[in-house]
Length: 79
Ligand SMILES: [Zn+2]
Image (tube, rainbow, N blue to C red):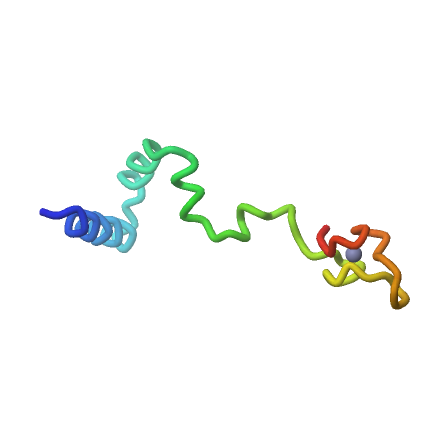
């Protein structure tokens, strides 16, 4: 069995467990996986939760008038 075949077989088994609602084995298995590997599976928005677009300027970094800088984010456009 090649690595790819093994991975595909594991994915198939995981899918089956999810369909059957048998999460215990998955939780047990995933608890052995390093945290950073688990985090790699999450969408990027989950990891960068506290970084967002500045609500005051909608990310432009510009102030109320042209040529001025947003006071809330100091021109970065991020909150
Ligand atoms: Zn701003």
